[in-house]
Picture (tube, one colour):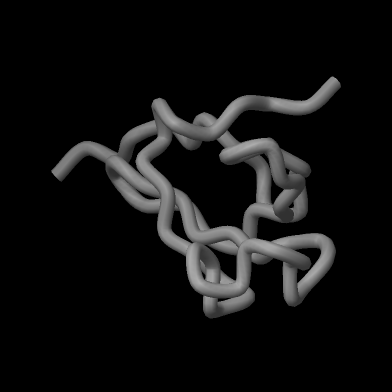
Length: 63
């Protein structure tokens, strides 16, 4: 089976839903990232956990 090239770098900062996150793992179609600030004021129900799985197309590179 052929390995796919990673699009993100572990430790890279990305933006999702207006929040900054750090990439901690990358899979075929998703990344796992953790919020730089947590809990997020006024958004505790929307983001109850510090880590989140995001589709690659929904994460924007920062910088």
